Structure formats: C-alpha cells, structure tokens
Image 1 (cartoon, rainbow, N blue to C red):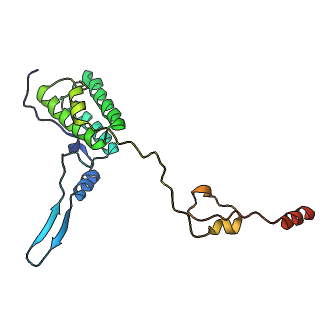
Image 2 (cartoon, rainbow, N blue to C red):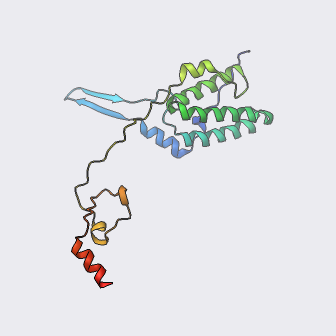
Image 3 (cartoon, rainbow, N blue to C red):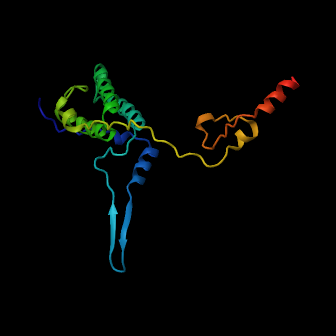
Length: 188
C-alpha cells in the first residue's frame, strides 16, 4: 500500500454543539494545595481527542461524517457498505471492550485509513489486540440496599404499596389477629 498525506476526517468534527460544550466542561482544574505564595493545581486533559464521547454521540457524528465523505467525494457510493461494515464493527467492539479503548481504536483506524487509503471496513486484528481493552466483568454478588428504617406511609394507609419490593420504606406485613378474621367472616 502506498502512503498518502491525506488528512483524516474525525468524529469530533461532527459532534453537535451541545456535545462539544459538554466535553469542554469536563476539562477542569483542581486546586490541591494553596499557601500564601504557592498554589498546586491539577489540570485534567484528554488522553485522546475522542475521550468523553458517548456511544450515541459517536453514532450520530459517524452518520454526519459519512454524509460529509459522500458529499465531498472522499467516499464513493459503492464504498458505503465498507464504511458501514466498519461502523458495525465499532458497535460490536463496544459490546465487549471498554468504550474508551474503542474510541482510541476508531481514531487510529481513521488516521491509518487516510494515510494508506485502504478500504473502509478492512479488519486489523493487530490493532484489535494492541488497542482494545476487554470490559471488566460485573460483580456477581448483587449489592444489598440497607434495611429501610421508616415505615411506608402508603402501605400504612392503604395496606398495599404500588412500589412493591422496590419501595425504599419498610412494609410491616403484620397479619390480622384471628379474632378480627372471625369478626370479618361473621359480618358477611
């Protein structure tokens, strides 16, 4: 493959203004220590340009980018299926790998595609092995909520609560006494 000096077109160029503002607000400064003359400030910065992009933002921006590639003839209509194959692979990767590593993979894939002009959707197992981080397994033990301390007002008033087991308040399920059961059957 011959290398070209074509500049890659990236997802972050096609984010909505709302998404761009949200990403800018994530970069923060934290004052760790302050004295009379010296102040220690921690500044956070993005590891890569896509950091902080959510999967739904990526999907929408990717479709805008596809439209841009088609309208500027950087992608021919007969090559759309290859671009969509790459899009599908990104969504499949998102299911099994950490999203931040998938974003890094996508960024570098676009850089290499622009440089070497290979078909979109060309699979690179080397990049997958080197860049993608498997998702951590979720804990198998469910987290128990602490026992509720207050009585449920709804349950107290009506004898039932529409929230059921998901109610955050205590349901005293005291059975009525035998005498009150017998009185209820006599009255019928």
